[in-house]
Length: 477
Image (cartoon, rainbow, N blue to C red):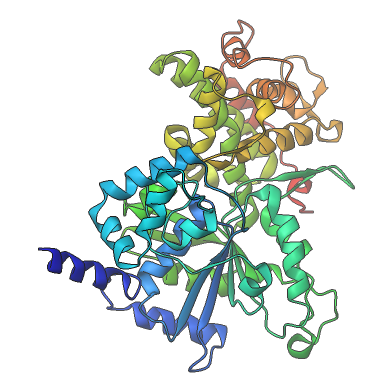
């Protein structure tokens, strides 16, 4: 029995996964040809950032293509020095011992003893150390395959052909500005796939949204002069920067729950990458509308926090949650009419992403913890065991943008110009709870129960019947 199990585990992890090889080699060879890789020169993919989604993305690639070691290398970067606290180490030990396959793998790799010592308090584990064994600090309950972990950013990215941005939006600019220092002498242009869902607000010269792909485009200033005949301030072109998002929960995707996603960007890379990433249980579609999908990925996080608050404050009342859902979706529909000329194209993806985030996402969880008093806004938006709660910064960004008088719209009842945020009472309330902190979580219920609150249907009708589209919000003319 032991021998058969050990043989199975060996087959699973010696080359990255147990996979049906049919078609995988061909897909990999096709992408290698498009990237321009010569025989003997592996395609190098690095995930920058080791949160739940970034770690799962790297692990999915390792599971799928890890067997082609001579053709492809996968690694993940995370900062060194993050200690694992005693409570997490104890929980991690329980997870290991509840999974026979994981237990045997660690024993075979001579890695089990350190987890015993950490459980007893005799040793401190570090996040990069446990990630090598397949444990993401933000997702301890879902063991991944072992990963090649690099803690030196320059070593991780300097020769990468494809860089996956698994960082929070709040860290993307800083890290990619550092990466640009290591790419100054490059003669090949890398491909960047951003998984980040969040935005920044910029008010000059006109109010507009800055998404992670724009942050990357602005931050990367390598010299590609030898190959591209461009000057030293040339950026990685936007056609080489893509966004991947969809209605999904990272742990469920790794556990092979059926899921789908969209990779958005220029046709040159989105179609071959969609084909490369597609798996039987993870269907990847492609779409040309990069920035709008990216913004929608940040918008749903805003309202997920409020959903968590309502759920906790009403003891999971289905009626109260449905009332909130009606109002928050009407606000999101109103906002999409400001952002895009054809908002109806976004209705399905936005609602699907919102639905899964409200059900099980970290932003909804954060709202619940705030309402229960187990967390407070003063504790910040980086939470141990969960990572960055990106909805908090998104609340501030959307509020600031939609408060600008230059974006005024005509109030249908008062017949006077008002800032768009005045037609978004849920967004205003979340800002007062999370950012200005002038109200408690209870304010979200007061906002829902306001007798003067309009029927959410009316907000949708307003959006559909007025020319609210503001192309400048997405940096378009």
